Amino acid sequence: MKRVLILAIVAATAGVVFGGDSQDRTGGKQIRVGFAQIGAESDWRKANTESIKAEAAARKIDLKFSDAQQKQENQIKAIRAFIAQGVDVIAFSPVVETGWEPVLKECKRAGIPVILTDRAVDTQDPSLYLTFIGADFVEEGRRAANWVVKSVGDKANIAELQGTPGSAPAIDRKKGFEEVLKQHPGLKIIKSQSGEFTRAKGKEVMESFLKSPEGKQINVLFAHNDDMALGAIQAIEEAGLKPGADVKVVSIDGVRAAFEAMVAGKLNCTVECNPLLGPQLFDAVDAIMAKKELPRRIVTKESVFEQSEAATAIKDRKY
Ligand code: GYE
Image (cartoon, rainbow, N blue to C red):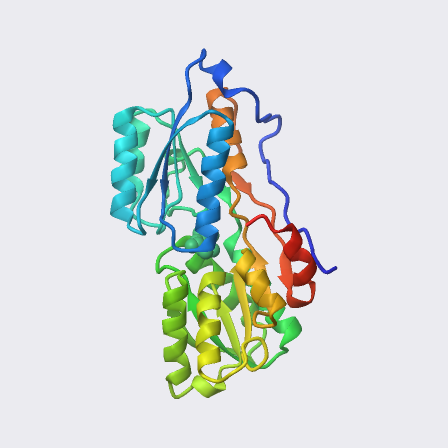
């Protein structure tokens, strides 16, 4: 089995002990946490929401959950509502990287600690949030490119489906992928566009790629998430080509549907990005309530899965 367990939690601050009973530390008062989610654009996101809600329920935390339907303005409104309600901790997954400083300053003025989960923000002011819990997206992009180098070789015409414009995973996955490509001049991205992390858009954009003058040259697809790859796989089939063979497909997330596509021979590789962040998020909330110091960065555990191991690995998938 080629499964490689790559990263463990980086707990930079020594002596941080998480966990415990959340009710005791607040003198019996229930902890109130506001979470501003991005939306439900992908299977990854749905698993992420599920994990957060389930963990809050298990710890008897009063979770105020808001779904922004992909809109930054909705996330900002939700965060302002959490401030007005005086929650103990605010957590959110920022849809894009920029434009958060004003609302984060409002949290700071209100004395409410902020935890970022999944995606990072672009800010020069480190005092605006306590910690960021999530994957290393640049490394995920590198892993996808390394798979291309290893399995396709030094020559390929690559189509790229990017995630939501301006989002941390779209920016960083592209960066990591291109970093590896620089050392292999025969690997060329000949088409690149956003598929907004959804199946429908992934299919639509792949259709237009295949119809373009360069369409016939595409022999590798790199999708920034599994959902877009799954949509694109349909487009490839409808164009009379074999996904997984005529066009090799590598994507990121590691959701169950991606494993099913690998078992069917249509997807070649998925780079795991773990959405099950609920336990780490509420460990951090517990640490804050106990006035313990938190590491600035908490990186999640991730692997890479290839087609040949999909049938065995799918049995252990939790999302
Ligand atoms: O890859 C994608 C989701 O931010 C890591 O967002 C997350 C990404 C994930 O919609 O499927």
